[in-house]
Each structure stands twice: as structure tokens, then as C-alpha cells.
Length: 220
Image (cartoon, rainbow, N blue to C red; front, side):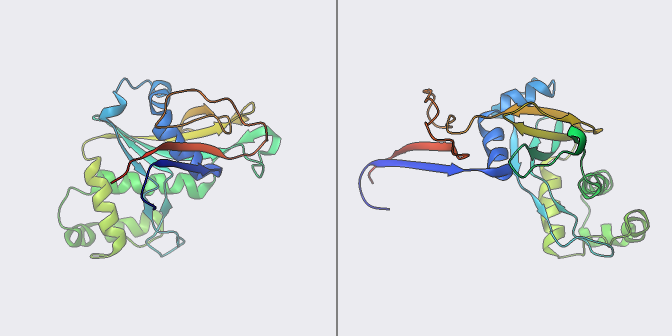
């Protein structure tokens, strides 16, 4: 970065970026739709916690969530979808895939069964049960997966887990069929900022980019 004053602009698009925008710019609206009166400043947001992408039978990994929102009483485990140009909703119906709901079941099992004992002791007690229930191997002791799990599970210890589908849209949403709690957030390209409160009208072009952050860079 060159010495002097200037601005830093962050542009992005797609589901991941919109999710980050939603939990940083629209967290109060998300909580309101969840009927949660927690002050957003008292929340912890864990963005895209990963538990391995190489899932499948007999493996330990089970995917990643788009975000987790932790309040003093609850932990909202979030799957995000958006109505981008590649989105397809047969018969105008949105349903989560089996792999998405499955990872929620697996994570909930870890949350309910790990009592903060050593991971080695936990594996010895529950490995067979886990394998029979999910047809997968439990996260091995000393693995990166087990370390990630312990870190995230500690952050939400004692909270009630709530499964959430966050749908980000600028058109009329499809019919959503899920047992998850549903939150819908409308976005408009080129309109939103995090660090400045002043409204800026949309740009004349029809770019899908969203301006997430723009702030002054001070001279050091």
C-alpha cells in the first residue's frame, strides 16, 4: 500500500459474498425474522466454518456451513442460497439437498454428545455409534477436523442449535420447502456499504457486483 490517504473499496458477487454482506450489514434484520431480540453487538458470527470438503461414506469430513450466528442463548446454523443467474428452482420450488441437511444432523450430533472431554476419550466412547448412525468415521484424534470442531463447539457451548436457510434475492422468492427456519433478505447491486451510512444510488450499468466496504485509509 502506498503512503498517503485514499479509499479502500471491496467489490464482490455470488452467494458467499452476499452471505458475508448479510451477516455484517443485515444482521439485525436476520435476528428480527428469527424472532430473536439479541443486540447484534452481542452476537458472534463464524463465517464459513469448514469441516472438510471431501465428504462421503467412511470419511470423516462433512462439509462447511455458510455461517453460524451465535447469541447468548442460541446458535443459528446457516445454509445460504441466492437467486443468481445460475440458480435453478424446478417448479419454482427451493429444497435443500440431502448433503446439506445431513451435515446439520452430523454437527448437531457432535454438539449434543461432546462433553468437552479429551477428543481421544470422546472417540473411544462414540466412534462405533457415530459410524452406525451416519455410515462415516468420527473425526480422528489430533486431526485438523477435530480441532476445528472443538473450536466451534466451544464457542456455542450451552446454546440451542437452530437450523436456518438464508435466501438472498432481488426477485420474488420461490416457494421454499424445508424444516429449517427461513430468512429472506433482499439485496440490490451497487447500493450497500458497511462502513459508511450515506445512501448511494445504483450505478447506471447493470453489474451484479455489490459494494461491501469503502473506508478511508489513514496515513501512518
